[in-house]
Length: 199
Image (cartoon, rainbow, N blue to C red; front, side):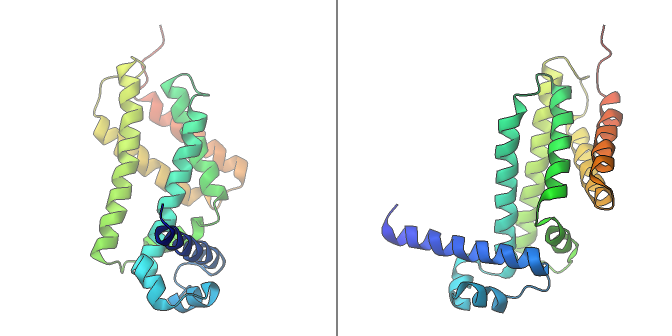
């Protein structure tokens, strides 16, 4: 990496890190570009050069969170030898991440904000597609190895995603153990319909 590109990456990281702290502290809506300017010492023009908008910064942070989640999940996934075990493990991993991540509140606020530019909506749709693809791959592997019935994988991946998103909303009002139990119960209910009976 040449020096200019390295400086660009460092500036981008500095902006993202400062913005992340502000979003955690103040929330999505209450954080302004002016706040990020003050926190970083960068000009507004420099911030817009790297991210285009406040939404762009926030999407970058969500994408980082997604990458971190996937990396930690892939490191854990081998602990679960069966696909059913992997689905329970994934639900638990999602629950713990959602309950513990400092950006959770700001992310909810961001997604509930109806005013989004079309390029932002497009990036959000790409993220959601990634979640559905992830679910489809897990479910398809369960079908391929004979653990799950042959079924509509696309439909089930949407149901699984919807179930996890809905649970994340309810889990915020629960104590940790209650939330974990709710995720385990949801996976029991989900798998009961697709798991082959053991012989």
